[in-house]
Image (cartoon, rainbow, N blue to C red; front, side, top):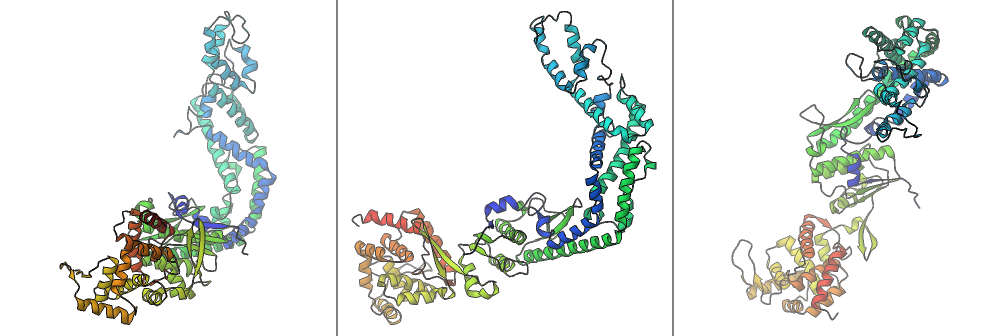
Length: 626
């Protein structure tokens, strides 16, 4: 018993969920097309050469915290082009003065609340309860008189805004954390600015912007060092020169040149010196990784573009780098350079499905499931695309060969190709089965190469069998139709199936129909008796078509759904009002004529059971006695 645990399905849902995304042809392009085991190996080697940097950040979490605080400080300036926004946290918090350290006259009584850690919640509570003061001259909380203090209570809402207090509290905490990194002179001035009474001046704003610029530069160097890896170094001509750019010289940071800053910078620069000793090896690993990525991208792009060319697409793909750390598979028209953004609108239904199937294959190669299920993937494709897809899926260097694949299809040519025409082009050699359902039970019957025959072979075999002669005529008429549709034998048999007592000769060029002559009838009879059915007699077969009981018995005794359907058609003489049966008969007739090779309908129920169920209902109505 094969142990199957991981499955991957190709169906409409897969196309909806994974293919033709807004900025890439398939989700996780990088994972599928670039991130190979070799890629991971090189990344690990590069990380190993840079591990001293990671160790430094792990052993000194304050460096990570410093990056975070620097970012909060910079964010506090808001998003104005000038670098300082009155709507930013700093502008809202201290732009008009620090009213937590400088409580307005008359509100000193609220100092315990304003300087408490929950001051923002208190201000919100105070402001939300203000409208209760209009109900009565008493406190809505303790019911004491507020006649003398109401004006003071209302002044809180005039001086304080919960959002501004929240921003001020937040920024004061940020300033407090940054103070040890400031020089003494800068720390004194920052204390002065943060505790101002009436608002900061333009000179003070410019001073803050100076500090912001230095903090941003310092933070970028720290952050760049922490994130250092293949993607940040891959475009450097000389790795050693690139590494030196991350060394910090505090002489350029007049506001941050404190004792604590020097201590952290010394630690960082020492770590970089350790990495610089391995710069040569690092350069080599990065070069190998770049070469591998280039080779991988060229290989997959070439494979997919070759498929698109032979399948008749006017498009090609490219795997493009995005944001230096990611790669996306994109589609381009062969006559243009821009990416196709709305792929669904540019490709036909068949093109979308065919291309999606190829993309799915690459996803399978990456995920490596135990079983791949392809749910009717190629029924709607024309010959060129069909062959290109089969070749891509099962015969290419990177394909589904040597994998367990279950392909479900209504398209018999796929079975013909896999089992009859070129089974040895597949690896492993494929097997096929015909699936039917009867009364809710799924039945499976193997299809071997010997079972795939021309209709001529099938017809001759069934005509030579011991089935009823009327059933034999079903196959003979089809055979003659293929070989010589206007011959006398075919004309005679058509009259039987149209239940004509006197055979007619029908012309295909518009000439009026006429009765067949006795000579024509005799010649046709002789041809049938000599070459096919020795005891053929027109009148005998015609009488069967007139006897509903005989026809019903033939219908019920037939072991083939195909024969049942033909007998049903004789019974109703193509006058059935059943639209389900009519639609199937018309479609099935055209489809079966398209196939050079077929399955014997006596052995395989090529007519679905639901069609026979419909036939059963109609026959029961005209023969209710059973």
